[in-house]
Structures are given as structure tokens and as C-alpha cells.
Length: 118
Image (cartoon, rainbow, N blue to C red; front, side, top):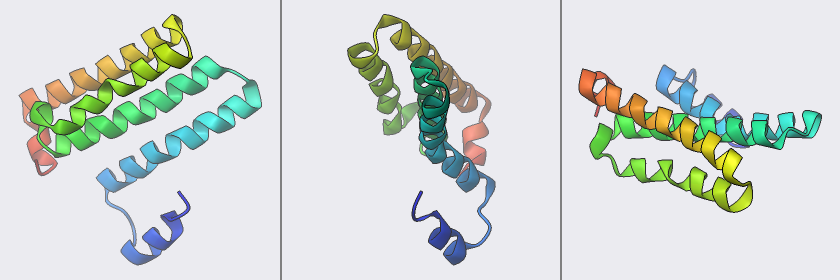
């Protein structure tokens, strides 16, 4: 996030996929702000996981859909939540990651990933 101003100065106005990636990368910052203000760890963890799921879904859709090697990253946050936060958080994060997987599958089946340049 510290490199965002020079990046915008160098590249100019970002296209919509770049804007979505930048928002996904800012998701954990928003989650940390939410955690600092409210103390809701599960909600902040879910927001961070949703940002990662969106980032992985966009990356996978742009790099091959269901055949993308980026899909393995959908497994990491539920395992981390299971190890650090417990079953309830792991179930919530698994639900978010499953939603990301189904969005990737739907984009692959409908051919939307081809529109992204895959």
C-alpha cells in the first residue's frame, strides 16, 4: 500500500481489474481498522479472508480459470483459521473461500474468464 501513490503517478488511472486488485490488497488494512475500533476479531478475520478470496478469484479467472495454479491459495486461509482462531472462524472462512471457488467455476463455465484475457 505504501507503493500505491508512486504506482498511480507512474501508471495513471487504473483499469477496473487493477482497481479491484488494489481494493483487495487494502482489505486487510480495513480489517485491522475494524478490529482496532470494535474488537470484533471474527468479523475482521472474515473481512480479511473475503479480500483474499476476491484476490485469488480474480487472479485465477485471469490466469486459466479452474486450471489456474492460483486456486491452491483458497485452501490456506481456512487452515490458518483452524489453527489460530478455532472451528467457528474456520467454518466462516471456509464458506467465504467456497464462494470464491464457485465464482471461479461459474466464470469458467460461462466464459467470463476469457473476457479477462485468460
